Amino acid sequence: MKRLTAAAFERAKAIVMEQGRDLDRALLEFHFEDGTTEQVLDALAAYQNDDGGFGHGLEPDLRTPASSVIATTVAFQNFRTLGVPAEHPLVRRGLDYLLDTFDASRQVWPIIPPEVEDAPHAPWWDYAGSEAGFGGFLSNPRVEIVGYLHDYSASVPADLLASVTTAVFAHLDSLPDEMEMHDLICFVGLAETAALPQVQRDRIWEKIAKAAEHGVAREPEQLAGYVLKPLYVVSSPVAALAERFAAEVAMNLDFEIEQQGADGAWSPNFSWGDQHPEAWEIAKREWQARITLKNLRVLRDFGRIETG
Image (cartoon, rainbow, N blue to C red):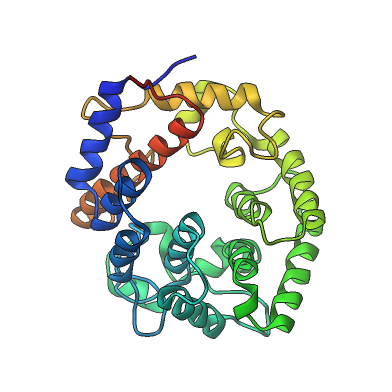
């Protein structure tokens, strides 16, 4: 079993502090130093617009300042990690945005707005093909958002929450066992929603387990590609499927340690190709800091960082 050396750990932290955004630095200090929740939220506030949504490159592959649902889900990922209460202004206004952008006729959230075309962005975020490319938004981003609405259910209309939750489970039942990777990841987020009744969480995990058996990477050479990594399904040692995929997770952790660059960073295994090369260089550096921070948290949680 491999472990990240103390020296490699320090190099990784240095990369996040040197080239990360204020948010990444605040998160690093929160998770590994003596940083506070307030410092993270102060940094996150810079990405929130007057409509309550988040933009301004919070999702690095979208450089538009305009609010988007996908960027707003990134904010809510942080709210969940930090345990931010519903009465906090960032959360309250973010919920307002999600309620305002909900398409009640189809019970979905459009993942991006037309304004994405006015700024550099990754090719997979072209607005024209977004609905078809994201399966009508039935899983991504809807499933993830429903989890956040359950986190803050007291601030969400009960009838809306009930109807969209019912729709999500009907969609889950309609999906084949071989699920699309991003759809599966969205369902993992919903299954990890502590506020969701346990019987519903178990129902989701049962489906995820079947899908992961079909799709999860099992060999190190697969992990170099854009694939369903075991760590996408098992995010912590106490995750529901940790025992079932223990061997795959151990392999994944070894692989991640091996992939750290000499400078201390982990880099994305994707690019924008020939689209907006100058903006991509900025986004790439942001991704490096974000991925490096994420990997440090995962390796710490699994006891894979040397101490002393």
